[in-house]
Image (cartoon, rainbow, N blue to C red):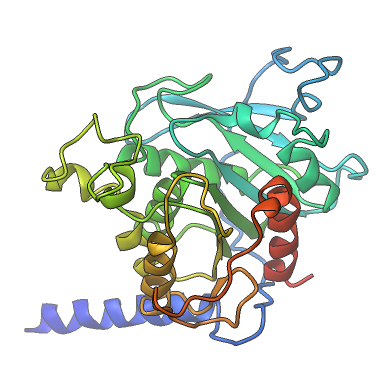
Length: 328
């Protein structure tokens, strides 16, 4: 009985500490916090210049300011990580930082490619005054390991990337946000839910799918890039890969971005499920686009989503939401 009481007390304290990290409010949260504890993870091993993103390539952003090796503790795979600083960074100031999580089975290359408008995701983030951290999950890009389809192994890799990023020069470990793109929400929400100690202040999600209905082709639409990877009845596989479950356990502010025409899904059911589960879960502050925070929704009475044209400016929108969430 004594052990049970102790366990319940610790669980209550953990939930209380999570709530203290980001108090409930109805305006955009100012998430400045006290300085982090003195103990920080060791700086990851910096790689020699790789020359993989030459500055004279018109299709790519300027090369990374520094690249690093990060070892995934779950797989042992060595992961590629890179950091980009604003052009006018003085080399000393600690900067708010965004860790970018690729969608689908993509890697960090998507964040350094220039858009038709001439800017890359990292350049837009840098122009907003943030450092940008990108990485390749297990089995992708320049990283070792095997593809895990955003399951526990890749979630643990992302968690280690975040811990390593917190120790980088110029990164303010009290102001780190996760930004996920499409299916990256599965990795991002899973990492934050399963590693509540991560120094992460918020989660921004661009049109992420909710569960196997979206990614496994398990609904009438029959869409999803994992429908040939696992059956809809494979509970052990999907237990690691349904963001709608993880999001209810994420105890930091959650911003959902959804345009009127999703980039994959035929309707908004996945957006409604993600927002509703977050509101009814542990997150202290949840917002769909620019709507009033902490609302739940019904498919029968949905607000108008963002115009489809916003997809061409989603990086700028992400930067704006990040500024609000960082309290600037």
